[in-house]
Image 1: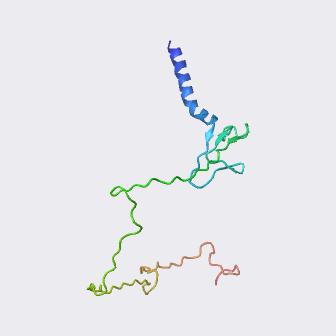
Image 2 (image 1 turned 180 degrees about the horizontal axis):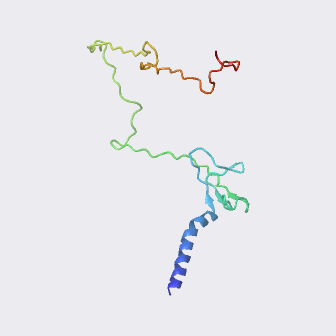
Image 3 (image 1 turned 45 degrees about the vertical axis):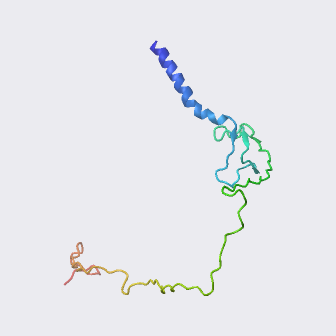
Length: 156
């Protein structure tokens, strides 16, 4: 009985795990990733078309790709209905502007305002190194020469 349950569980897991892999076998509707950028298949715009027989990388080229192109729909923009909530009549064009009289009292002028920005580099060197005492130099004896001169003779 346990073996039968294990076999049924394994078969169910196989069906569940294999279903996403088989989902690419059906027809696909081509939806552009960005508005106004068409999707081309074999040099023809296939945006919003139905593609059959394209299996991607699973079986590339095993079945010829069939593209069922979308119908060309020409729509005429409809005139929207007018809606005027208060009076029911169409409003006038523009806004009602009343020109001010010439002898009116003018407001006080605004104070002057000026601002400027500048940039520059500071004078001096670009890098300041910290002062330090240099290490002492120790001259070591020449090992392996045993008091010989450059000619190979011993020193007197």
